[in-house]
Image (cartoon, rainbow, N blue to C red; front, side, top):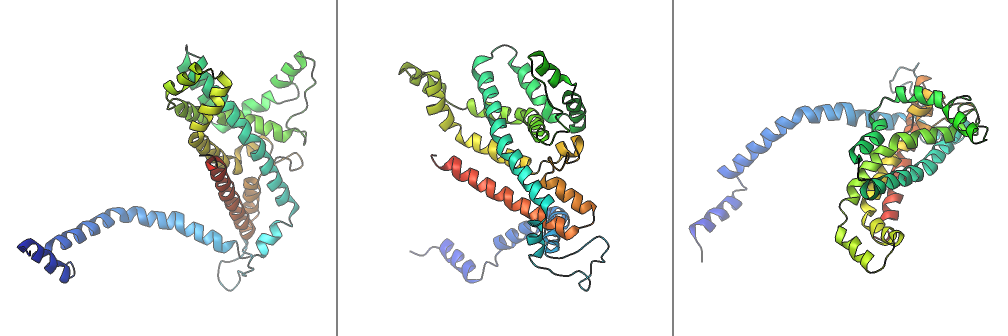
Amino acid sequence: MTTPSTVAVAGATRSGGRGPAAAARRRTAVIAYLFALPFLISFAVFMVYPLVASLLMSFTDFRSLDIPTPFNVGFVGFEQYTALFQDGRFVRSLLNTLYFVGVGIPLTMVVALALAVALNNGINRFRTVFRVGFYAPVVTSIVAIAVVWRFILQPDGLLNTALGAIGIAGPDWLNDPWWSMPAMILMAVWRNMGTLMVIFLAGLQTIPGDVLEAAEVDGAGAWQRFRRITLPMLRPTLLLGAVLLSVGYLQFFEEPFVMTRGGPLDSTLSISYYIYNEFGFGNYGTASAASYVLFVAIALLSLLQFRAFRAKG
């Protein structure tokens, strides 16, 4: 049966949506885009354009003394990328970064998870004080942290003094190529464990208590409950923490910049520090290519973490 309303709808459809309602929707959309236009312009100018320009620059031999015109900036294709892996300092920075990530991420996650479990289960009094204390390094200036840690890691500093009290002769942490990177990792773990602790603590508090109580009644021990219940239910939170750490640790820059300047003997030279130096030397094409190698590394590691944490999910 045909009614006047269906006839009107059919007429509006045949007319291509040129009715009053369609005009009102178009006006609303135009107004919305006008309000969003300042952000879109700033995003395009300060985000999209630099990204595209740096990507194109990575395929050129552009240097600081060149005038950026198509006539004197040579397109070299993937030569910048192949030259990177023939540069001993870049390969060393890549290996240093992988070492920092491979040791730092698991260590930070284990320490942060242990603290979160302790605060969630074992520590009842002064819980807020502990939370603030462990999180304080996250919001503290890296310069202030570096000054304190330089005193701690000196040959006669606090750490070696504590080791000497138990009969261990500590090394010169920041000037020994063998120990300089472990010192950076130790400092990074101390500085970043507070963020993960808060995230893990929030995840632990979402686990239903009755599930753990039922497992305890069935005879499951503390380790079995943690392994069979807590860890599987904490998998999304662990994934978030791992990805956040990966993005930060693959770009680690402040620690070697403030503490060691990449030394001794490039033992703490990171990819980000290498990129910083190349930009400083005016090698813009090389620095841009190294930046995109770092971007690919971050994307691949994040993808691997998603697959690993989702494997049994």
